[in-house]
Amino acid sequence: MPLRHVLRLLGLASIFLVTSTAAADGFGAVPALEGSANDLQIRWVRYNGGTNGAMLVEVKNAGTKRATFVADGLYFVPQGDPEKAPQRLGASGPLQIVDGNKTQTHVESLTLRPGETRQVSLDVFCIDSHRSSPNSGTQFKIADKRMPKKLRAELKSSNQAIYRKHKGAAAPAAKSEVQSNMWKVRDKDWVKLEGERKQEKRSGSGLQRHQNVAPQQQRRRR
Image (tube, rainbow, N blue to C red; front, side, top):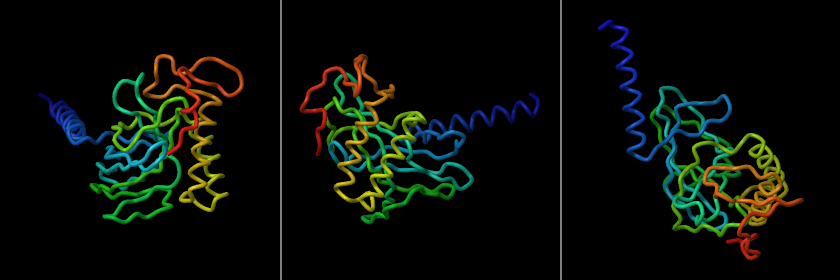
């Protein structure tokens, strides 16, 4: 067999091995932003909260160069039947890098060395106002893709204005206002995301409502 064919087969085998190892240990590729694919991998660890809270993940650099992780547009889908699942959760605000029992707040991005793995806590907020709230026992998966660019940009811009107004993301008033904003932006121009129900919304004018809306669930908080 020609050498070039042997090298190609070895390359394919190495890719398969890396992919299989990532799947076995729970890591998967970090969903890419436009034009920013890299060798970062991520896995879900646990959720602590209700309508909003903290999502703990692990991020690993599986490549040979330094790579930077940002959470813009990441969202989390409850495992199980979407027809019965609680709300999906979208990340917003700065990262919190977990180092033992300590966290470093207000970090917009995280750069990892080759082979490095870090735990990161993300502030997350419900994005389906008509569904019930998740809780700390809810199991999640990371969506395979980030939110669409338009939705991601609108949420980031409006939420950053709220954080500036309250002088940071940690203020309880900021979290409450961001949660309301997540619902408002989502309902204004609904787009399908991973984990969608068969009849997630129904048509209407103005602020759109969705199937199976229960008034007590529309603005349910922790």
